Image (cartoon, rainbow, N blue to C red; front, side, top):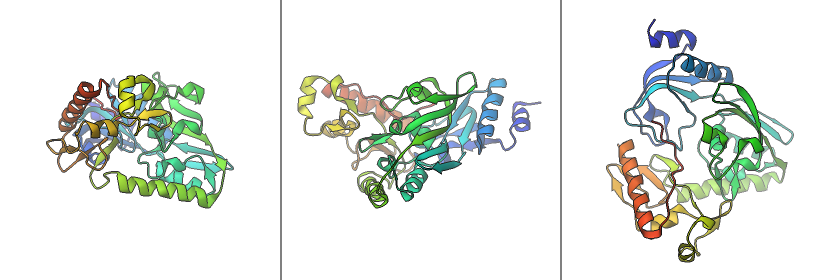
Length: 317
């Protein structure tokens, strides 16, 4: 029995040569050798077990934001997370990893529950938000997480408390160790329904107005710079743009603006004029175009400000 036949026998619905550009917000990426859309936790667990038993490399893809897939594609199994069950009980929310953040913001807002309004307009899924401890407007995913159910590196299904999640700035144990998130429980608070919905709506409006949503992108490319880790001379240069998000940072966008890098282009990949921490796909950008542009930006910022920018996006090999 060949590899594909063995896969298909154990996980019906697996496909071959699926273009990954169709499954990412960047619209970049070659074909996945094998591709499986997992609609339940059981299917995710099974797909991972089968890939491991066949010694097949695998990559877990959720909403497709915050990721840059290679031009050559992926030479193993891409597991697309599409588990979308959620429950709201009193002030607690349990949701599977594939639930879009937009759904959670909308549904909790309708019930007058606050803590997620910072995520108004945030792309991607809950799993991706937990993995990267996504944040904006002073809020972070970790603020409301009670526990997370995930598969560890040995394929064991485990429940992690908030402390065990090891949340850090745009990071978590799941990102650091490659654990696969299945679901999370969040504790919210009762609040004024109209006010909560208005705040979320305002954040959506802000993103629409300030972010280059007219072109495909992966979202923010670089992490903002922790103020306490930057030289005092640089802090002084940027004191007018320092913001608390969620602690004092110099925005990566501000560094890029001061270095006059907006509009820099490699192929069809361009540093956005509208929001300089975005690289946009102006048509047919390749992953190589984006990587070259990232390297140029990092080199310029290092030379001008002695700061090492760190990528926020994931680049599977």
